[in-house]
Length: 207
Image (tube, rainbow, N blue to C red; front, side, top):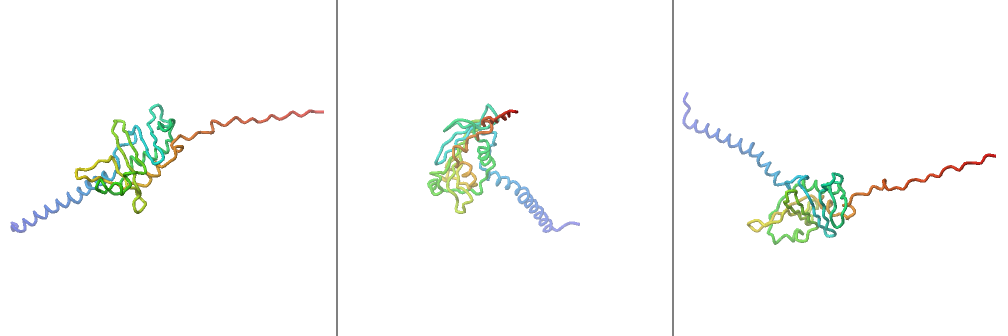
């Protein structure tokens, strides 16, 4: 049975449309989701890639370096004082840097950085990787909902003169706004307790 020319054209169009829908909606959706996830990630390096950190807040500037002599602690303070660092505190910050994601990205003119407190940030984190690559995270003020911070990574203007502003977790502020004593390794006082001097019983005189 020979199909009419019009019917044959409609069948071919339907097949073509079906193929387009499959590749765009099914396979394309997966690719778009991967792109979305990639764009949301703040940084792409891993924790073991980081060699050193410099954290600058309004109250303190400190330098941290991976301890190559021992795995306990993994980090050492280099300035403003030197000594073992508090691994739990540093690991908390590292986890945010490695796994942290941006909720949204805004493109604004570079001369509007001040409106987001990025010209006078509450904190700046400089990251040096083992391969000598450098990254930077600048933390500005909270957004209107107080759930996110405005931030900027590796500041550089785009060809159109705009810059990208991220919305990141307020946990970053909690991670860096600390006293110097919190960055130091806690002292184990149990090793320094003086020995207990237990008096010996006094022998009793017998009659």
